Length: 486
Ligand SMILES: Cc1cc2nc3c(=O)[nH]c(=O)nc-3n(C[C@H](O)[C@H](O)[C@H](O)COP(=O)(O)OP(=O)(O)OC[C@H]3O[C@@H](n4cnc5c(N)ncnc54)[C@H](O)[C@@H]3O)c2cc1C
Image (tube, rainbow, N blue to C red; front, side, top):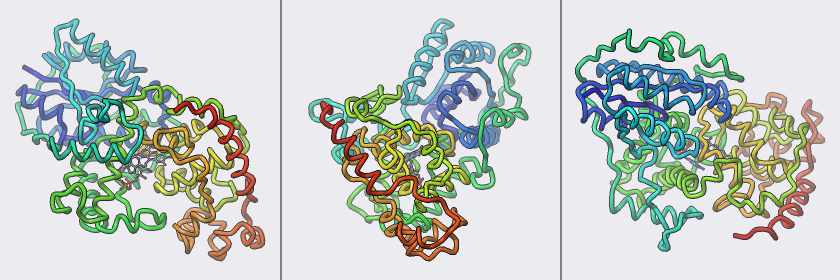
């Protein structure tokens, strides 16, 4: 039997559950990846994310070739076209079954059900696996069988589950029999020639930074081992300082699946004397961040309305009178808000496709609180520019900041951007790196609006005063929280 392995957000050979199962089941394995540019655009992917994805597909093609597994790329417009394309391809390539790892988002689930039905109509079986998370987070429930809405008890239960079941790393696939595909049978299928895959990037808006983001699982594994060897032990002390290389910067690789969350977890645990918790503080803290990633996927599964542009706390969200001020929004987007830390962060995003986690929280809270602009505008802007754009974590992070989500920041705890930079970028190294107008400003001016105004710099005035923005947000949320039914 010949097996078809459908790769999506799992662009790796190592620790790939569905690939390992396909290789167990069949001597000959064919890989397929489906590009869906219109669907990607409707999911707000920009050039940065698309470029990294297709380069990761190219890297995967090379790794698979060493195992004698050819990787074919098909092009459809939208997910709705996937059932016909995948089932026709499976038939033309003579594959008796299709293997894949599930994705938790609503459109992806609907696509997979439709593909499964189309395959069943031609007597081809779909083999589906859970692989995007360390544990199957759909099975983690409260004592009364509810989905969790608060992180800390979720984490506790997650650790109990892990103690009971462990996290199983998939078997590495061995080199196998060469596959010869019948070109005439594939004729008429929407194939993308290997040389043409990168051309798809030009169909998307925005810049790309292939110089910063080398693709492939080899690069991901190197980054993981460097982080584990050199930085994880001190993660708890350094992770909030934006100028410091204190975090793993593995998020782009996790987003495309060039590395699995399990590989990250197991590497961390190994240096933590086998412990997932109760070991070295830095390592425990990093493992907790991996569990945050699991938590936001759990939330998507339990509350799929968050995939449809609705807030977790719908009543609060609908009662807040969000502003739709395009001028203020543009100043935030372009890093011209007059708040040095906000502007540095937004320019880091524009220039590199990535932003430090502390900076993400600061700018998201600034947009949704100080500017009272609908958090969905910010969520969309992030997706369009991030190299690590990931629906669950992005939506979770935005709703946390906007106080409309699960376990969200209470609405009255509004970060003061000046205090945040004084604490987490005290010498202004991060600000100066991304905001050249402030390169020569004294550090004190970067963290104090009065000194900043007095410094006579060629730099925008504040888009809104901190006290005025804060008061406006507090009033809007106070009124809206009366509607909160939860
Ligand atoms: C408004 C907002 C938007 C965000 N959008 C995204 C996004 O689109 N994609 C994305 O991967 N992360 C997102 N995050 C979460 C977090 O900021 C990034 O995962 C992190 O900055 C990536 O850097 P790192 O790989 O060095 O993380 P590390 O600190 O090394 O953590 C390791 C991994 O744990 C996971 N992780 C860490 N923090 C979080 C978190 N708060 N929530 C969920 N997972 C986490 C990530 O997969 C990360 O790569 C967002 C956070 C906020 C506040």
